[in-house]
Image: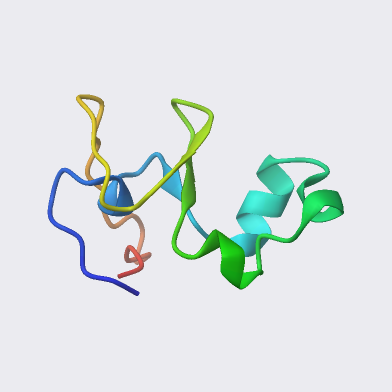
Length: 75
C-alpha cells in the first residue's frame, strides 16, 4: 500500500479501499467490473461524498483513523 501524508483521503476514516467492502457498499458494482480489478488501482470510496476518490486527494472533512480495541489502521 502507498504511503499517504496526513490529511489525505488514503488515511481518512471515511475512505474505504478494501475490494470486498467496496462491493458491499456499491450494490451491482461487480456487474460492471469488480472492485478486485486492476483498473480501480488505489481508488477508494469516500463515505461522506459518496464518490470514488484517489488516496492522495484531500478535503476539509478529513478525519484521522484511530486504532480502536486493538484494531490498527491499514497502512
